[in-house]
Image (cartoon, rainbow, N blue to C red):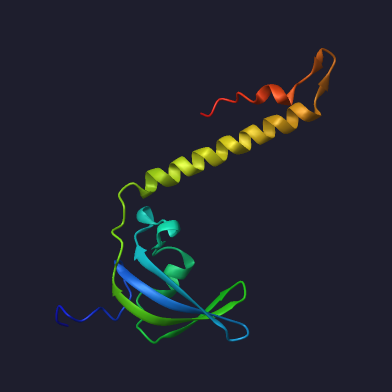
Length: 137
């Protein structure tokens, strides 16, 4: 393969275009770069090679039709493979950890508000409105 040719087999560092084909035979185009799990960020088009879809396409060639049962999707057609478009960011892991931390904090806050709304004790009730200053840890 010379430098002008694009890769035809999917591997880490590939930009992949696929058609997701549903039960009725309708296709929806999807594109992503296949990256190591630590760099995955679907919001930026970076799919983990360890994700179910990543595993399904890894090692396959352009033109392949792959059985893939997920929701109403039944098959995947590999439309194109080129070198990755987006460089995997080094901070993807840190950004995922920050999102997870925020989600846990939000869940803790909701749990505390639900408890405060429903608890009644002999020394008084909790005031859920007093939790407006919840510490975002």
